[in-house]
Length: 510
Image (cartoon, rainbow, N blue to C red):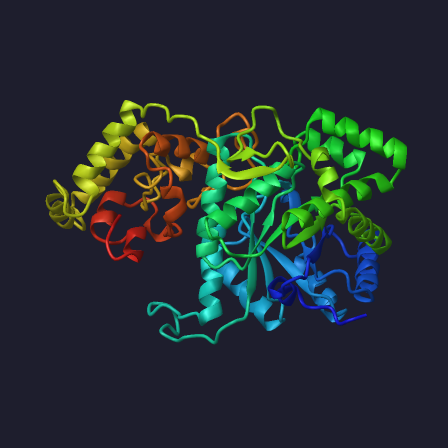
């Protein structure tokens, strides 16, 4: 066999269809399942079909074996490991420390994700962290790739560290039902690519038009990074779990689940592999750079069967497009349908007219422009007043008055680093379960929150309010730095005027 290109090389080489496989470690290395994983790695290392093997990090929000353990064994076997790296369990210091360790061990391929909300742990539910979001983490790693410069105020500060050759990707979900749920996903992708993502992997879905929509969007918007489609090997048992909504951000219809059951009765255990092979052929045919295989049992003979079937189906991939149209009838598509292929034309659908902006939003915008826009109206006077109040006996009273008002109006969490002006006067600290600052996670379902399904996703609401103002593309172009925890409980207004909040990272407050 010709030598296997590395994961990074395969993405950079024209004509190479990149294939990665996802391993999901359990909670122990002493069980039979772990031995199966090691056998899979050994078998895969003897074959050259896979360009990388990814390892999840606490998938589903449950504790599991840390991915670097398997990463070392995969690397030692001659395969390229791709470690999932999530934001949910580590604060920014632990994240940085872990990245130093990854660099030391040569585990440079990373898939950056927000992460599923933590679930059950020792004696109860674990505390979510989400100190950084995926955009923050991508920017941090990009800085480390160039040579991370320690801040002057840090111990040993002012030193520039040697560059670290990380190769990082991100995830996006085109499988969202409504416009206000879909477009924030795409807008966040802009922020991720701007933050340095080298490749993109889709969320799991079974709608060929949605896969194609993302491909068209990235081309139209010049998001020029390789795109891999996730292909789930789903048997009837797994289909029932997904149908119940257990897997965040992944859905199937009752009709699709019934089809899975019928095919399994006909073809037995191979049915899931045959269906996945058809989807691989479709993705390759429409122009994806590669596929990310997940859900398959760690049996390498199954992967050989899957890939050989996909190659067999590729010559007539258009025949299978109709088998992957599993979205609700009222699903929003960004592009018009091509009646001939069943995919999309490169012509955008008209979007629904924006709802009228509520008076409270317009009034808040008016007041914000009066007092918080540099060089306008009362901004100079407010800044002078802030300088006088700061450090005086009036500061505690001023802070208490500010937060009494903002608690009543915005359910304020007293973070001291306010982002209301950027997010249509909705607070991510109190109204997003993960406290995300740069767009949604992928876990929402029909516009509702992954964690609190009775609540609408914060970013669906932010999009609707910004659209009412004609400013929805702020979610594409902006960036909000991570929260400064040193400011918790202090006056966000004083911090803004005196250059202490997140606006200090820009030349002037926005």
